[in-house]
Amino acid sequence: MIDIGFGPQVCGDLSAGAAKEWLLTDGRGGYAMGTVSGLRTRRYHALLVVAGNTPAARHAGLVGLDPIVTLASGAQVRLGTHEWASGAVEPKGHELLERFDLADGLPRWRWRIGDVVLEREIAMTYGRPGVAVVHRLISGGPIRLALDALCTWRDAHGERYADGPPPRVVPTADGATVEQSYRMAGPGWTPTGQWWRGAHHRAEAGRGLPPQEDLWYAGRFGAALDAPGDTLEVLAWAGDLDDRPAAGTTIDNARERHRALMAAGPDPVGATLALAADAFIVRTPAGPDVVAGYPWFGAWSRDTMTAYEGLFLATGRAEEGRELLRSYAGTLSEGMLANTADTGSVEYNTCDATLWFLHAVDRHVATTGDTDLAAELLPALRGVVDAHLKGTRYGIRVDPADGLLTQGAPGEALTWMDARVYGVPVTARAGKPVEVNALWVNGLAAIAELAAGTNQDPGAAPAALSKALASFRARYPSPAGWLYDVLDGPGGNDMALRPNQLLAWSLPHAPLGADLAALRAAGAALLTPLGPRSLAPDAAGYVGQHRGGPAQRDGAYHQGTVWPWLLGPFADASRRAGRQIGELFTGIESHLPEFGLASVSETADGQAPHAATGCPFQAWSVAEVLRARRF
Image 1 (cartoon, helix red, strand yellow):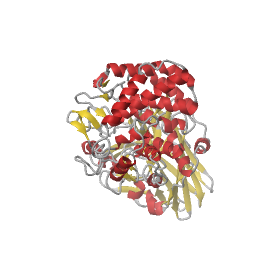
Image 2 (cartoon, one colour):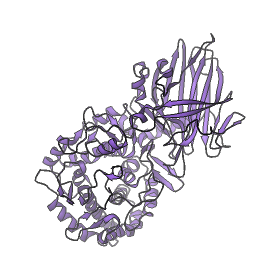
Image 3 (tube, rainbow, N blue to C red):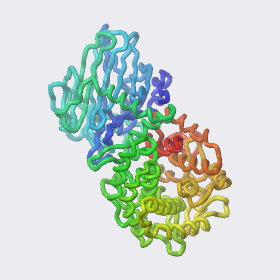
Image 4 (cartoon, rainbow, N blue to C red):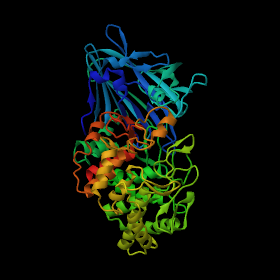
């Protein structure tokens, strides 16, 4: 793993330390998350966030454990850091923060108070919702350590305020249960019970969302730490509240598991990405799934299938992947893959998720030789082709005139560029998007190949492939020297320079051979250190910053914003064109200690210096960088 650590110049600088976020996950969709400085900048920052039956159904529980050190002299020092609605930052524990590290992926802080050095380390239990927070005296002492437990129980996307009832806290022998939903346990519990009003979240303020909430001060844990090596451990967990995690084991178990995951990486960056990938693979009551991003996304089928090769095949988790592919195949309806996403309902509202599914199955079989899975799924894959030839939801159908896929319905945005502002699609891209038809050709070729490898009937795929391939090659090259982004749209053919065309050269069964001139044109206009822009800067409608409130951010989402996941297709296309890609990932490697620590962000500003934006931990960003570097 790459070395990620910060000294007092970052830790003690509130803005610098608060801009760097750490993440731990429990393998179920729950997590712990915060910042280097200890300041909670988001509504999502907490030590225990618990997933429900789906990864998107999360609740925030234990928000914080604020340390208070009583020295031998009797002086008390508070080591928390809070920002309040009044504008005050109090206490200012970050000013005593001497060091922060990610040690084997686990966050670790060290505060210095004279000759006293206190360390905190956090880990989550894997496979169940639980967290261990361990404080250890490193030098100096004796001291008395107290930990103020700040609590809530609310939807992770919302807030809770003192104008409503406080959380129900019931004392236990060694702590308390909160709302009968999670339990805290540790030494020296003293119940309290009062509101801390006006906690401010600066990142939410910057995103145009409600920036404040009230926290319930439930009580205090405490113990004497007399000599270096003495510890105070607090556990918090949900689920079976009577099944207390074993004390003293969570951190060691997490460290051992992380080291095993990182062993899959061929170098420190690869090891870091392999560990990052693990955060997104979760097990739900329905089986394995993929969280699209932390802290606010759940499972989206498009993201899952786009990330599949990097998350599962590049990390040696093909058996879990196989189970996932079989499960997703069961959601096919009218030839479309369900987009079971953050809405909590099953929707069929993408034109490309199903095509990415075809790609994922093809890559799985090609990598593992699992012809049994190919034979099992081929009838469903043939059904996808038949449904698209006939026509399915939202105007998704094969145009009999040229064999290309067309799509579009009023008020809908069905491609990956699906942002809306006040319900109106920003980039509806009705017609025949270039990446959709590159995926269509790729999927048809994959089905024909899978059928040949299992001695099964390929159905309509070969004939459909022949027609679509010929039309793609004849129709998509534009006079500008690159590919049309959309054919036959409401306004005709769209020549906007976007990165979607990369799939026409990058996919395993790409419809076009390497085009060095077109790739150079796309790279010159679109490529940044963190990935391609979603629109060329000289195009009409280009927006260089992905900032502001929801409408402003959604308006910029696919209008110039950088998307790191597109580095994967760019790398593949470059290889095919004979270009060297050795320095293509340098910017990403520099990014790993910058934003979502040891991970890759969802997006970045289109304009320099291309500061990271969006979700700080994003599945397909990690997966495509991991895959492209590895293969």
